[in-house]
Amino acid sequence: MANVIDILKERGFLAQCTNEEELRGLFDKESVTFYIGFDPTADSLHAGHFIALMAMAHMQRAGHRPICLVGGGTGTVGDPTGRTDMRKMLTDADIEHNCECFKKQIARFIDFSDGRALMVNNGDWLRKLNYIELLREVGAHFTVNRMLAAECYKQRWEKGLTFLEFNYMIMQAYDFLELNRRYGCKLQMGGDDQWSNIIAGVELTRRKAGVPVYGMTNRLLTKSDGKKMGKTAGGALWLDAEKTSPYEFYQYWRNIDDADVGKCLALLTFLPMEEVHRLSALKDAAINEAKTVLAYEITKIVHGDQEAEKAKQAAAALFGGGSKAEDMPTVKAAAGTKLLDVLFAGKIVASKSEARRLIQQNGIALNDAKVTDVDYLVKEEDLAGGEAILRKGKKKYFRLVK
Image (cartoon, rainbow, N blue to C red; front, side):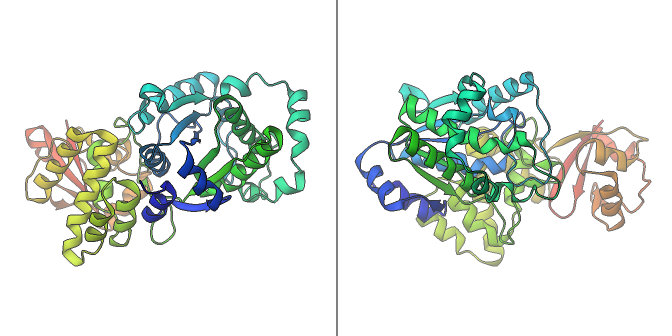
């Protein structure tokens, strides 16, 4: 079997590694226990987590053991990485609920049978720590000037970095030490924006445990223009079917830019690389075949074969000229209601100002008829048969029902 580093490199995951030569040798010799952390900032994982879950799945398929760490402890502080403001403080009940939601979602990607993977909550140890003991055991190994130079804190200078958030790096580093002590964990993985935090954990564990451990990051999920992928008009592209329907999820990947198809096929599906290369080489109208395969494969992984097939058929019916598609995102509408209010209430747009702009720019159509009046009221005839098809832009469709 190929070394998992070669698999991750070929598919485009690998960004940085603390000591690639040593880690490669370790992968050749033994089944390595590694971990990735997921802070419960919401009640669902989103597209940004998806690439980390896929990296974890490839690692497991190569014979290594994942620890899925949910942040019941770190979630009380909140990671300042990439933030210009402080995260909303969550209640203990919120954190517990979100952790349970994460556990169910992660189980779709990782095989937990027969001890092949572990699900762990860092609240089990972080919430029990004595502050003075932590300062003496861990704090002595961190220099403030080194911490302040970390990339994860740089965006917070203008508005100020709270002491609460300043402790996040120490908490994450302590996680690695604790996981090494409890489970023999030798590798921490995460997104490339976590490099500073991962390095802190590697250095702390080496000093305190006296054993070689490693850090490795995957590339972030970005578009060809460098912007983050996975954002919709309603916000994040969630992995929870209640927050982002399988049809809407499918359509997102079906409509990505041509330049991003090859990268997404490699990172977000399990298709053999020979097939990835074949599909990526398609040009002009033929690239739609690759997009259809991409959307189907990703939706199958996240929502299962049945939902993927339903979404595919719904899209085919719609783009093939059909007037109805039962699996499109459904929004309630009543005759006499402003269409602008329907768009906002149904989360088709993020704000009413966006709705006005779309209507003014001919970006909204109802039953194939452009809506040009920002004060347009939904009519009974629009909902003939109890429903209507609304199109936003060129490719996004919604089903309005009474």
